[in-house]
Amino acid sequence: MDDRVLLFFQSFPRERRLDWASLLRRVFQFDVLRCISCDGRMRVIAFIEDGHVSTRILEHLGLTARVPAARPARAPPPLPPGSEAKPVFDDPGADRDPEPDPDYPVD
Image 1: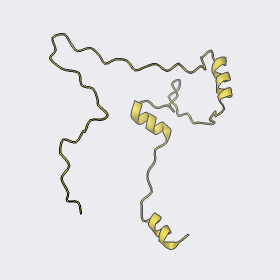
Image 2: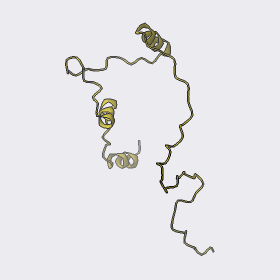
Image 3: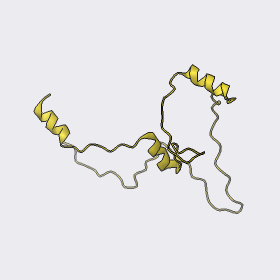
Image 4: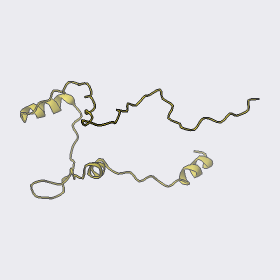
């Protein structure tokens, strides 16, 4: 590897990455690795990657292994009675910049 490339990568500090359990704890305020029976720490010993194996485990436990059907999004909630508010819908084609673009001279 070229010394310049190596120096380039060494000049940046290494990113700190959080593991999946820490991210879930941060978002949901729930520690997924805390045992609900004894309050001790659990550890992951394996990942199941084969869909057939996970289906067999779920069915053995009496749980459904079928993916639920997709459903359309629900409508927004109705406005309160007597409200003067008008519903606002996001227009993907709308220009969100309140400032007009400056006119630059073209050569």
